[in-house]
Image (cartoon, rainbow, N blue to C red):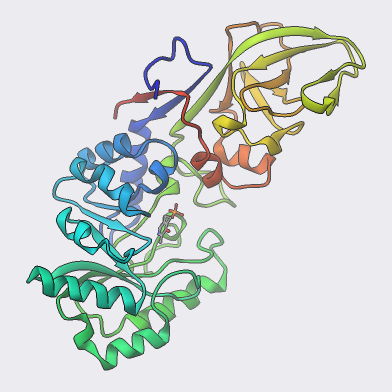
Length: 366
Ligand SMILES: *Cc1c(COP(=O)(O)O)cnc(C)c1O
């Protein structure tokens, strides 16, 4: 990966690790009932898990989550003295790797619990785990029936040290959704009996539901990376990502001529088209065709024609300053990941996790 060659890049991703750390501190201040973890799954939402891990660890973060074991293995050595947990649970046969690398599984089925207890017997010592309880997402986590079985057969947990018991909120970004309180109440009933395991509820938006949620470990991802955790209100987080695309070529297109594949856009006036070196292979969603925009000097340029794999065309007629070699703002002060997402019917999470692998990435230290 040509991480450090903005001089030859067609698109540059700037990542402000200072803003990332400021966001983490902000979340810590809002969650006094316990530590705030960093969720680093999917390469830290596309920003680069190793750099994000180092910055958060240096700032004092000591709890981390990823989705997959291999994501954990890739950053384990960067996080001494920290809990590093795998949300997707235990893939059968991988138990010894968790033990060898001090990685904490999030256990969400009786089968996983049995496998982890067996591993503890083999290892001859207690093993940390996080227990996951399903309170409404219906994807992963122990059901009410599973919890009842564990209450009746507590010996199944022998050798397992549940450090936390967690659940995942379905609608936390909708603060007044009655599902939030329903999940909280169901969670406090279901986690009864796992004494010693501290409760973990809040994702990014969950932190903003306020105190009294009884969360003793927050698990934010999105808000760390600048996505708005309170979509109905101004974004309380600092922007972390900037994405700029180089203008490669500017040309005049006469009235009636088409631009891009299938000529889905035609010039209705004499038009200056600026072609930028970024495309859907870089995570600029093809659904932005004829509906996206970029910014130059704070003013928008409509995206015209199809987004192609490596190139995207913009109407620069009203921007005489746009010439080959200038840079267009794709994500930045004028267009957040959430804004870009709204233009193509997705969310900021998908915009960030789609970020491509061939940008020059410039990390600005904390
Ligand atoms: C992804 C994830 C999080 C982080 O969610 P954000 O909304 O990005 O803060 C927390 N908990 C679980 C179980 C997750 O899967």
